[in-house]
Amino acid sequence: IDHNELANLIEICDEIYGFKNRIAIITVVHKPEGRNQAKFIGPSNEFMLVYAKDENKAEIRQVALDEDQKKAFSLEDKDGSYRLKNFIRLSDGKYATRENKPNFWYPIYVSNDLTKLSLSNKSGFKAVYPITDTGVERTWKTTSETFFKRYKKGNIIAKIENGNIKIYEKLRENQVIKTHWIEKKYHYGTKLLDKLLGEKTFDFPKSVYLIRDVVKLFCPKEGIILDYFSGSATTAHAIIMNNAEDNGNRKFIMIQIPAECEENSDAFKAGYKTITEIGKERIRRAGNKVIKDNKDKDGIENLDIGFRVLKTDSSNMKDVYYSPSETQQDLLDMLEDNIKEDRSAEDLLFQVMLDLGISLSSKIKVETINDIQVHIIEDGFLIACFDKNIDEEVVENIAKQTPYYAIFRDSSIANDSVAANFEQIFESISPETIRKVL
Image (cartoon, rainbow, N blue to C red; front, side, top):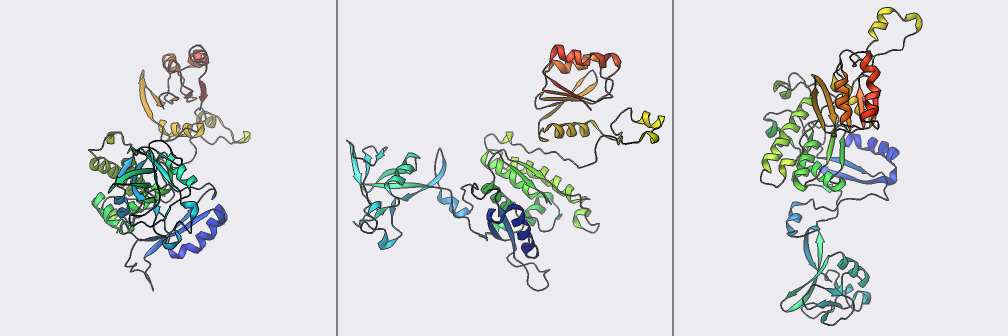
């Protein structure tokens, strides 16, 4: 959000989410030279409001966002990347001495092969104290209780250096997340988008690296990200890149009204009639580029770069709210099929999926049985058929697949005989299937 919107939006969000659940207001520098369209002073930053559903349960994933800091974590174990830091506290000057902090002065016993550490003396173990190479008696970084907890997690090790045993702590990829984000990678992503689409199409798109870092901090690998103002679909692009990097399975939901591109705009001249068309094309090209850029990465062929485009609309069902005095024979004939004439099988399918609480990103397979089109969702959890003239053989074939749900169109059954045997077929073959008719 920009400066003009900040105060109003903070007030609204505090009321909706609760003042105590506001985690931070982060300043993101996106155009250091400032916008030259400003009347007085050109803004060079925007604001990111961070809220949690429950401030007491909020968690920020421990990742390093700074590229230079990432390079320091060159070591790796089963828990990820890390770097080593001396377990002797050296940074607090005269305060981190044996005299000033006696509770932080204690021996750590190390086995001869350096694989085991203990707080009690054992045969074959050697005592190590927090004494510097120059002979100064310092302290360990933590009390003995905290040391033991960190050691049990595998984050304390011993090494031999210059003939002496040194105690080190593994520091993971984490950092204090600051409220001022100034890295160059967070500047507007105009050049990246123009290069990807081959045309200038969208003014001031968010940096894909900004959204990548936001996702890294707040969204787990199996999370879902909702973007109410999708624009050029920077968020979708970022999620595909993150999934490729860490083998995640994050999903995105992009929402964008089909705002028209002005006829004198570069986007319109390039063939894009609406902003949504720009976003869709970006997702297509971004997915293909990510796979190409990571062609040597194991398992990259399994990266999910597909997406579905859905539009909000009125109900698929006809309006049947007529009073008896308004009812005429031609109206009754029209209502013989209660579904609007311009609706496709896919329209009906997605309505059914929404009604049943089935994810719209679920796997959909289409099969043909006796020239009748059948939709199979999530390997047979739901089987739906909306074609007309369904005969007993089609019904029997669907029943044999024992779906959890079987959905048909009211006007689909070929004749009264099939309709009469419909329930009997399922009762004899797949009685547990829940049958519904639109």
